[in-house]
Amino acid sequence: MEFREIIAVTGVAGLKKLVANRNDGLILSELDDSNKKFYSNRQHMFSPLENISIYTEDETVLLLDVFIEMKNQKDSTPLVDANASNDDLRAYLGKILPTFDRDRVNISDIKKLVKWYNALEGFDIFKKSAEGEENKSSVKTTTQKHHAPAKDMNVQQQSVAKPRMTKNKV
Image 1 (cartoon, rainbow, N blue to C red):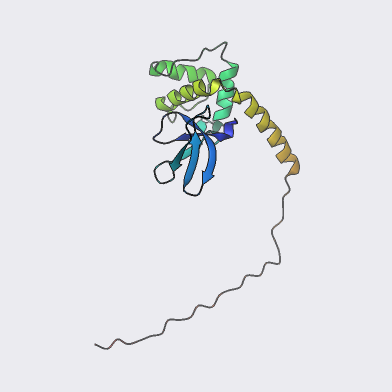
Image 2: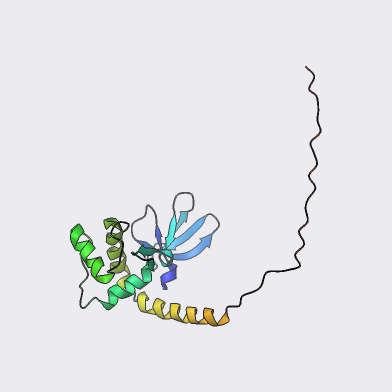
């Protein structure tokens, strides 16, 4: 399992793993590959965890980077309970990510962060994803080419017929 396959679904507790993509929704399973189920686009919104980031005072930090930092500091800063007091939750995130924006990061977001970390910790995807992302970024920087826009591009204007003037007789 990779970090990019994990999805949060609105209205559904916990995290899901992407199994297949359909035009009208997604087929998702539990993280342990049990209980596959179809979730419709009409009823749910999907948020891949790789697209989620946390506000800081300067910019945003990807959720994966926060998870890796939580794993690295687990010995020095023990993980707080998701049901701890608001002050304890803010203090914990302040130790992990000192520059997080205290106005825009809600307590519910910190609770989700802790719950998601607990759910994903046993799967050991933080290390694998981090190495994969580093390899992908190094490959992308070496293979990117910038193309100049086309100079000989002809733009044709379409003629629009004028509507006929008719007189309505009453």
